[in-house]
Image (cartoon, rainbow, N blue to C red; front, side, top):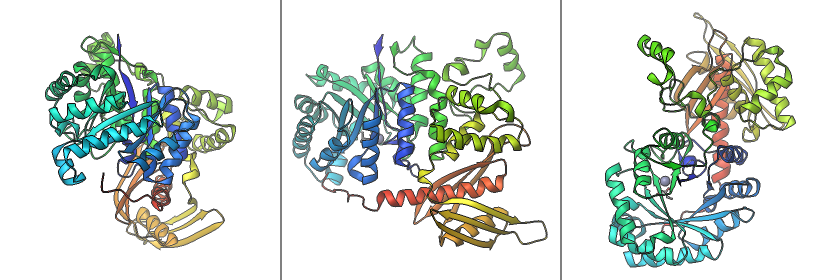
Length: 514
Ligand code: KIV
Ligand code: ZN
């Protein structure tokens, strides 16, 4: 069976989703999990864009063994130098360089003629090839480029040493049949195409990124660029788990294999969702809460008689343990550690202790602690290095006849911030008190609260979206008390803003000539 290489760009294109910025430690944690999932290539970031990106790529290159580690670079020497530097410790480094080839991008964005673009592409690939053995070239906005010109560029960059040619549908414009024909025309029109692997990178603006990726594989692509949960610029990228399961379930139509251990899909999807604070929609294919839920009596009856009547894949095949083990206060550290290991978490002794203490708090408040509670406990209470501000204390006075008043105490290292404020309701009062304590002007764009697990003592998870300095930051918090979860979510969003500020403070100015 032909093998399709899975190139994961969750940490690069995925992180470009508004509000999805991650700390370096969070990126490493996800990269380690991507390794467990079995992706072939991890695109770790865009090193020249900021010192934070460079640091993240370096750390992943140094610590993650197994997958190839790729770093993105525009077709300019300083980008390629930075990518090469970030990959110095990688076991298998790859520089991914890109340059737009569509008439609209060349004329208006690059202000370069096609001949200049061709020359620059070749020069950059050659330059990158002198730094690492494996170079990938992407003609940006590939699907809106003219085929004869695209074939010329591809032929020349392959001659210059590119071993992977990635055709991006940068703006998510193409359709499956059209894309397949387009790729076949490229294969036919490029005499040395057999010297490189054809790859695709599809955006989801029209909701067909996975369909386009599948059509591409049928047309001859053997690398597909995807992200966990489909996160990415604008409407996102082709979703890893949907693509992989479509290949697996409909292997009769697409007889290709991947290196993905599908049983790690559920964990990975939860980890990415909780890390960046983007909830997974209930009806999302493969990893949504309802993806395997049968509500109608007719369906339930069918499934009980024969599962396959309404199930085309099993929850177990994507790592969703149908026999969800329930832990309680008496499960002990040993049981807790084992369950986390089964869920794919590898914690240091110190992290385990922090998580266990939090588990005991939760287990005291609610009798049964479910797997989904554990995901929340681990992701909300570990990886705190990004959380420069901590919620130490809050108090609320509220009722249907009094003005809701909140007092909060926040800490940042040795510093303490304490303030009180009133609000339209208790949540508003807490948010006002946090703003006042930190001297912040944040606008609340969205507030969502949901129960993570069943029962009256369910763990509540709050997701907030704030606008600070004209940018959107998402934060999440969890607790059996939704006011505490709200305060934590707000502080988490503020911390993301601080991480973003730190990451971009010295950001390299973008180079308009490329
Ligand atoms: O969408 C795009 O064109 C990209 C390239 C950098 C591959 O992300
Ligand atoms: Zn992209």
